[in-house]
Length: 90
Image (tube, rainbow, N blue to C red; front, side, top):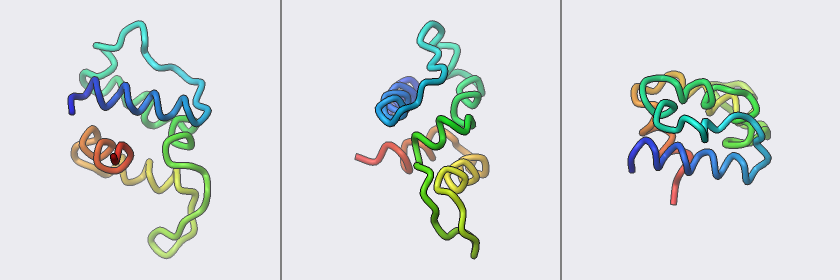
């Protein structure tokens, strides 16, 4: 899956779950190059829409799912591959 396909599917999923933030619809090519898309990926409202806000156990702590997701995303080497494999699971 290309970065553009991943980004479009993430935005579609987030919007279906109530996300109303920016989607770079007017500059999609710019958004998926470099780290521009990170300004969406690391938004709290986007993360809540993607991973949910319920609590889970992580590293012996109880944390909201979105915080765990965003933490794992931040630590991942390839953010795009992480999102494809952990959010866009078919």
